[in-house]
Length: 591
Image 1 (tube, rainbow, N blue to C red):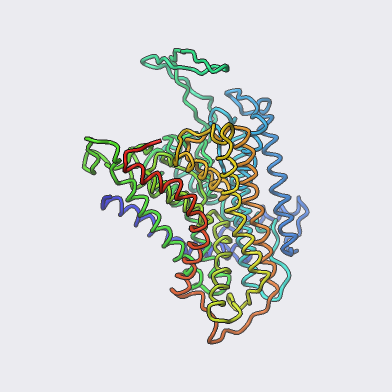
Image 2 (image 1 turned 90 degrees about the vertical axis):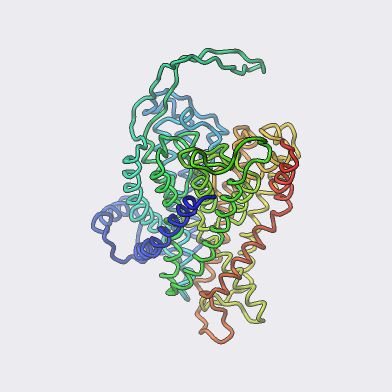
């Protein structure tokens, strides 16, 4: 670890801290229908959209109607994405004449982008045409992010309103999230990325002649292999910057290229890398200030922000430390930090980013359910990889995905308040609203769905040698970590991977798609049920026994609940995976 590395981490968080309040207040004004500086530009377009689609922007919805509208929108857009993938060979903007995507992979990809996961079990530049990348995948990056923001705002309204029946209008919330927040931010970020060298064009792929021909072994259909002489290299390109911007700001994570943000056409410089990391946390952090603004308790918003920040710093410090340690299996090799080398574990990392920026990016992307990567997580040291797993296993609430992180954290807040009420022998209250049995039942349903998906499918995969284990690139505890990581990433709608697992099989395409859909929508329904119940309640005046939710004590309690409910649930699985791998690594054993 170096002073320069810590400086970059602290600078990153300091900028996020400075931006949190203005971004949060702006979003609160957008969803409270107050005047903003972009109203003259987007308000006429908003009215036109409502008029052409027959939406009454003044009509609000109960939580059940809100949920149905969200599910219908997500379902229809998923079917459109699937259709585009299956028909792309005959559609325009396919200069490489790429074939139609096979059914299982098309279903997995459509589910992935609909749920804001962006899991990619394929090589994008060799599988998806320009039209598919833009009209199917990039648009879903906007749609899924807007849905997440809308749901978070609906939950916040459930807290802030009293004795009402409605949570807002889904169509209005999703439209405003897109026009007022995502589109302007993406235009600015895309231009900044282009200035750093990120590619943005519609040219066919270039083909360069190699200075020295290469001979490679190509596997055949019957298991045999043949040699092939390669004399040219294909250089993929396309409309990258526009997709990169929403990929990061929407915490989507699906890259235009297989190497994702490690690819120099997606992330060429340290400046572009820093901008991409900032954009991951920008909206999720701002939503904590939006929470405080809309519930008229800014200190509560900062208490929630502090809980997220503590978990973030613990995670990034651990990953940075773990990756800075020398690999014990490399004997007689100088792995210390110097002016000539980064030192530590540089396997799977880009030299232009080094260990500090790789650790920071990996922590941020797994904290925020983004899934974009600028290094290969499968190559991290066992403890470093374990932190990335734990970040997701906590429920993606460390800032989390746009919207999803906020409503996930608020479910933990309700649970923490309930536990606090039990400890003092009073009916739990959250910002003046009593937390009753129905609320806790829905919260526990939300909490239990997540580990059931991860541990259930992981266990089934491990017990099927010819299906689940056949895709592993590593045996032993690291192989278990690869399977755990895949289902955790899918259930948490993250999308990153331990790339040693070949997930492009019928089993993994289908089960991961089901995991992504359940991890998104089965958890949204109980969350909206809690919001719908809270919005109908009247306020109870605070008393001496009321537990304040803006103090350091509340933050500590919230952290304890997250760690106990989240981390301890998965401790046995982690013990058999990365923890065991770490111990065996220091005895000289690998798998």
